[in-house]
Image (cartoon, rainbow, N blue to C red; front, side, top):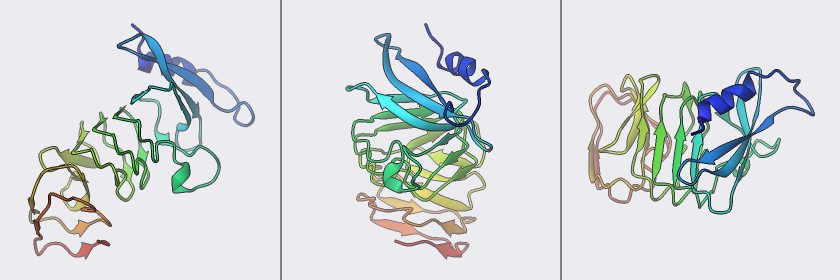
Length: 212
């Protein structure tokens, strides 16, 4: 059985020059059927090892990123939301990663069939509502501590110190939130389109509430 991490490690440990030869394609295997499910292209950068291309098979719905990939880039040089690699991917149902350092705002926007997200390590930085518009996603699992953590029952992502609410998942069935004392900031659109939610209790400790 092939190991995603070993396969990736073999590639990134091979030096090569950035520029026209930058990046290498890495095949990943569908573990259920032992077939290639998708290919990834990764480039070495000054700050992050960046995913710059994702080429799925027609029926691919699940993606597992290995630990060497630290940032999800764009499909071209334009820094536009619609050019984000997984933006608006309506076929993606499961996403797993184990080493992302940065997750951009609206990274998975509009991935309407996405039902499972597992981050084996917390990223260092997370933009505004990376999973906005993921109408089938009820929770994100974040393990191993770090900057961010998650509450599966309430579908919440927040900083590990409890001070900042980042995002509530749209498909979570919770009807009420009682935010604990110690929360100081609610990010922009943190509770966007949470259709089951009927009330939020906000403690006096909150000093900043974003849009909507």
